[in-house]
Image 1 (cartoon, rainbow, N blue to C red):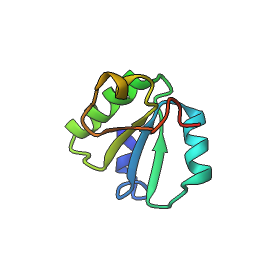
Image 2: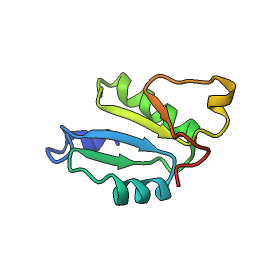
Image 3: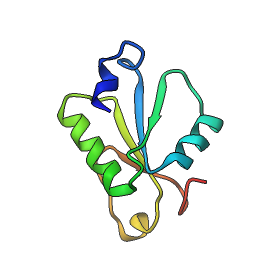
Image 4: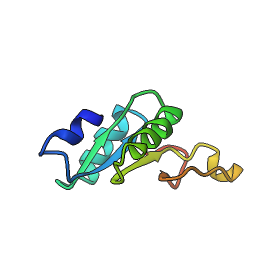
Length: 91
């Protein structure tokens, strides 16, 4: 993903890192916006959290994660710059 930031097409976009391809399809269908780019490591929540932390450590402050709530909300878990869906799964 770091390479995308070098492209003029993506350099000013807000990046949302998601858990999987189905999340990208859902958001592109229901929340398409030319200012936003959805991407995924396709490896689940831990990789989303790691990707957001890595990109932000490289100065990319316009990167956020969006993950399924699973049980994190019930357990009181939170992660910096990671937002959860209101329910168990996005779809």
